[in-house]
Image (cartoon, rainbow, N blue to C red; front, side, top):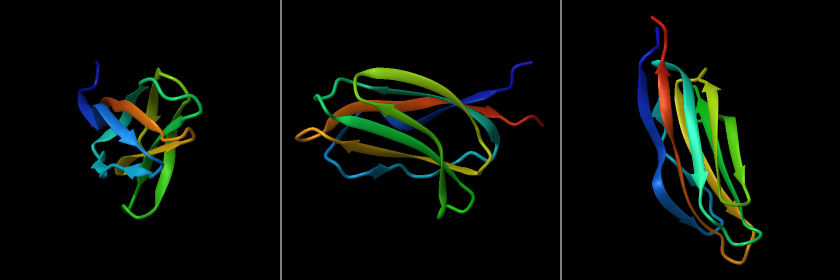
Length: 116
């Protein structure tokens, strides 16, 4: 029997980031879930720009460990499955390269509830 899923939006559809400063989302509690299926998409970028979206987990909201990194140098979409072993999850977006890096992207998916 399929376990219930809940939609999650770490970065809303068609969010635009500009410049080279890292952007960090607020932490999301994922204690009730043991797996996430996430899709990251980014639109066209200037030549030489690199877009990186890293999904992180934490037990205390202070120390964060990377769970997965989406790395793009051109318009693309990737989907991954992640085992959730920590109660908190967030995303960190980084842009680099080019004269003034700009990207439009999203990072969404579903959380899969733990077996009871």
